[in-house]
Image (cartoon, rainbow, N blue to C red):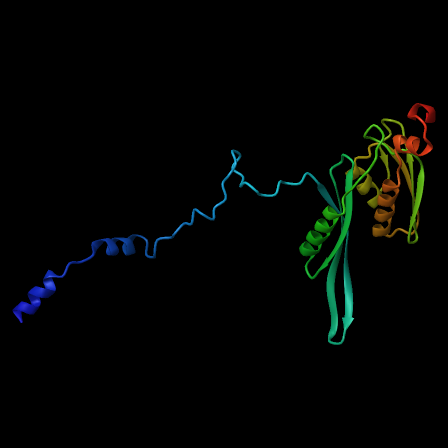
Amino acid sequence: MNEEIKKEEKKPVNTEKVEKTEKTGSKPRKFDNKNRKPRNNNGERRGAKPKSDLEDKVIEIRRVTKVVKGGRQFRFAATVVVGNKKGLVGLGTGKAHEMPDAVKKATQAASKNVVKIDLIDNRTISHDITVKEGAVRVMLKPAKEGTGVKAGGPVRDVLELAGVKDVLSKSLGSSTKINAARATLRALKAQKSPEHVAYLRDKKVEELR
């Protein structure tokens, strides 16, 4: 018996394991440095997507209903316009069961549909134009410097994010917001710069003016 007691006393105790379990209470974490992306001087990860300079604005959020066999399904439909106020603008729509998800989808769709607008002196449009979308008619006219954006509702939102600073507008017919925004965007896309018109007529810009 005495020999067995002595053998048990002689067994070494691993103090390192005891200290680790007492201090941390769990296994130490392993960090894989191979999968980590190196960072730039600014602290950002290399290869990461650069932040977009596009601003977004929600034009309309509607609750839509779908009638199915089991009852009614409610969702949200959002319309968002994005732009950098320097000639880039886009319009998008999105649907989801939650309002933030619908706005996020619409913003992503608008960012994919960004178009370049030709502006005169980076402030106004080239010529008068009237565009019809559905039952909505939108009329745009160029204005002299200092006039400002004489528009309201979705027409104003699209013009401001496109970078138009001086313009006269009139919304006729229906007051559907999404159609008014689409008509305004079509009117901006249909603008022709003096250089383009001179090229089509085989003349110089000075001759047109």
